[in-house]
Amino acid sequence: MSEEDRSVFELSEMYAFLEDGGAAPLVGAEGFWKELMSGAPRSADVIRVASGDGWLVARYRITEDTPAWEKHPAGDELLFMLSGEMSLIIEQGPKEVTVDLAAGRAFVVPRGTWHRQVVRSPGEYLGATYGKGTEHRPR
Image (cartoon, rainbow, N blue to C red; front, side):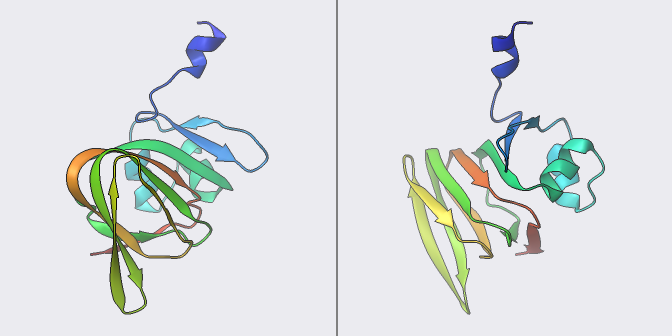
């Protein structure tokens, strides 16, 4: 396999973890998300992302609303719509604010802000998350 073949990948199947210091290892073997969301990392990739300092960059397909709220206490999250439309529901104190994103639009979710996604039209988005310490709670 040539060097070029090893550097070409599907960003929806393998993800780049842009580590502080400049490394960009690929992560995301089968079961990656289930293990990451469990809060009990065991594999090297999941441990690297869950406890490491860096940005997880991935392309996500959205067809349904997220089942839970999430927040990233260690850093912001950049969301960029590639196609389709979604609304971000952002918790600000006692109220919820809706941010609508269509293809070509982006939003930075501030560090420590509870948020969730509502699909308006199925599509894809690019996410860059400084996710160390990410928390989830039921809707």
